[in-house]
Picture: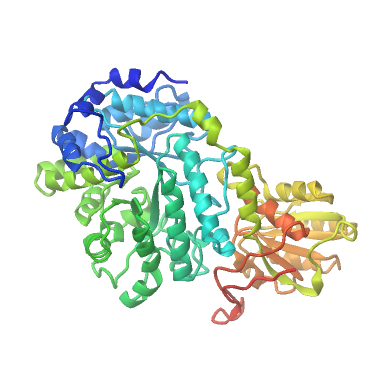
Amino acid sequence: MHTSRRTLLAATAGAAAVVAVGGGPALAEDDDTGRHDDKRLRALISRMTLEEKVGQLFVMRVYGHSATAPDQADIDANLKEIGVRDAAELIAKYRVGGIIYFGWAHNTRDPHQIADLSNGIQKASLAQPRGLPVLISTDQEHGIVARVGKPATLFPGAMALGAGGSRTDARTAGRIGGAELRAMGVRQDYAPVADVNVNPANPVIGVRSFGADPQAVAGMVAAQVKGYQSAGVAATSKHFPGHGDTETDSHYGFPVIEHTEAQWAELDAPPFRAAIAAGIDSIMTAHIMVPALDPSGDPATLSRPILTGILRERLGYDGVVVTDSLGMEGVRTKYGDDRVPVLALKAGVDQLLNPPKLDVAWNAVLQAVRGGELTEARLDESILRVLRLKAKLGLLKDPYVTRRGVDRVVGIPSHLKAADRIAERTTTLLVNSGGLLPLSRRTHRNVLVVGADPASPSGTTGPPTTVLGAALTELGFTATVLSTGTAPTEATIAKAVAAAQGVDAVLVGTYNVTAASSQRTLVNRLLATGRPVVALAIRNPYDVAQLPDVKAYLAAYSWTDVELRAAVRVLAGRADPVGELPVPVQKADKPKEVLYPVGHGLRY
């Protein structure tokens, strides 16, 4: 537990300054519409030094589980990458307006620790002269991208929710997920993904998208935005102007989207329009080139025609615009790390996310103002948007959280039950020849579970084969588990074939199967044993096209526990399959022909 907020605030000069502006309570909301008094916020801005203004625009990573006492390895990583020891020093040196949490940065061990870290960050920031609360963010999309794992509640990801087709479920997932984040001090979530996944070969979006139909995606995006924001967390639709039709991952390369302006308006724009109509608090840019929208060859993150011309002026969006991570290759191919943040601000960005070298980026913005390339008024415009958001989220009134609040909200039984129920409505039955499913304990009690075991996403228990085996055991089957990996060797395949001899059925988890994948050899050799084989696509539903001889195929859209357990309940007839494909699956040998259309899904 922490000292009361009043004691903490009273001890900080920054808070005194906040309260003093305009007298009365610290930036209270002006009316019940949630709009705030820009006059007071402008007064705050007018008191800032130029260095403080520059800091407000940055959202930075920092290693460690604690704001002031991280482990030595995290201190070393911070010194090497940022030149500070911990979050408190980061704030003192650069006065950053935001901090982003990552699992790999050791920010998210468990809910109580996350709450303590958040409080430590706020305390350090408010202790500064004219100190302001920090907007803490993370990528909690659920499904395959989540930074906070168990015991927090983890929901199905976007494509699974798209398969479920229920906007109510999407909204509920957002509301519960948002409430849990807020309880831990995270008030900006980089979700939902608004990209329309029209390219099956997309290496970076895929199941992170709600689907391939722009209108369906738009409906799900709007529902999730409302869910997150009803819980007091800023939602962030990404990646504008649309990252759905690419075969390049912008983390490692510079994707080019060849859509015409008309195609963009029809395919990519609807979910962003829907997010704006739903009152979205922030929108994230994409490090992609769209020549039809801006022929200059610049990535969208640095494109004034795209961010100001289209997003601000044509779509009428006046909320916060945040860049995707500035450490990604897609934004660094054309300009140096010192030019990128300056060009992003000139394009219309408000928050500069995670630059590779903060000192380079921070000093570049500072020098651009001092040298006249950027005006201080331009900075003020973005800082006002950031402060409006902080005020709307209640950070200027009370940025602290409590351990008791964590216990009341995070991972409570009713939330976990809701996640299980929603997951059950997403599992999609793609093939069921000869009525093999549902599997009966009476006729198929002994089941061999084999398949890919990719690293468990988002701190779920994993590995997938173990989770599937445990779920079958719980339902009264006798399960034997043999992990065969994403690229099974000849020896592994032989072992699986031998293990299949004495069982009643085989369950195989497939993961992104390609024409050359040895997962195909594994499945075909298992089929040759004559044992009934059930396959479960644990990521992309497109796997089914590569394995046409499998008699029963399900899609789970992710290998998180909640989705795998739900798939087993469907497979065993404890729940009916109701999910429907939110993307088309093309034939493996004739990619122009559709094997299973959007909306395909069998029932029992």
